[in-house]
Amino acid sequence: MTRNILFLILGAVIVVCAIGGYQFYQQRQTAGIDISVSKHGLSVQTK
Image 1 (cartoon, rainbow, N blue to C red):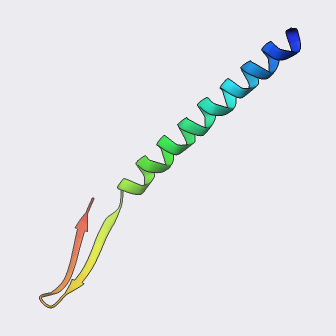
Image 2 (cartoon, rainbow, N blue to C red):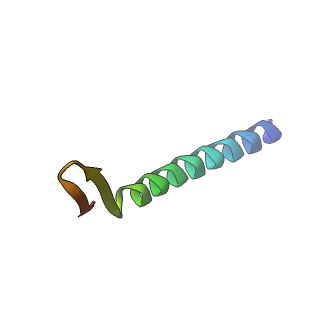
């Protein structure tokens, strides 16, 4: 029984770390600049 609880806690920690890592990755992706080229020229915008 103790071993099952240990695996359950370990699984929960892994899930929490995965969700936290994904959220951090998404926040880093939204920051930066957006560069686009069209027939009107070059456009640079901050996100």
